[in-house]
Amino acid sequence: QVQLVESGGGSVQVGGSLRLSCAASGGTFVTLAMGWFRQSPGKKREFVAAISWSGGTTFYSDDVKGRFTISRDNDKDTLYLEMSSLKPEDTAIYYCAADKDLKTGARSRREYEYWGQGTQVTVSS
Image (cartoon, rainbow, N blue to C red; front, side):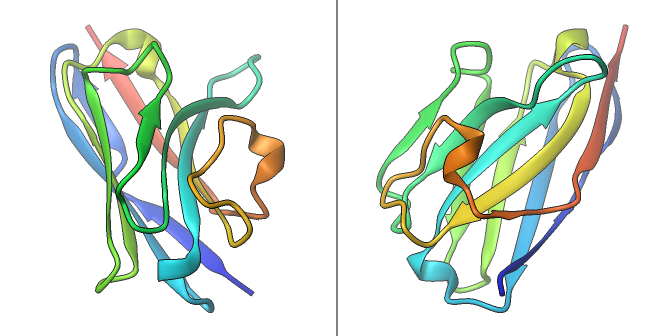
C-alpha cells in the first residue's frame, strides 16, 4: 500500500513562491506516475501537474503553466511542486497522487489510486 505525505504548504503573499513536497512510502516509487491536484472551497478537485515515472514527461494545467514546475527525486522517493508568481486564485488544498498503472500521469483524478492528505496553500494580497 503506497502512502503519500505532503508538506511545504503555508501562507504567502501575491507574487511569492513555495515548494511542496510529497514523500512516498510502501511501494516502489520509481514505478509510480505522479500528479498534483488542488481543491478550493466549493470547487471540485482539479488537475495541476503530472509527471511520468522517469521524470521525462511532464504536463500542466493552463492555469499554472509557466509558473509551476513538477519534479521528482527517485532516490529520495519524493515528488515536488515548485510554485512561483503565486496568485490569490492558487489558494487551495494541494494533494499529491500516484498510480502504478499509469506511465506518464493523467489529468483525471479518477486515474490515480493513491492520495495524500493534502497541504494548505494560502496566497494573500
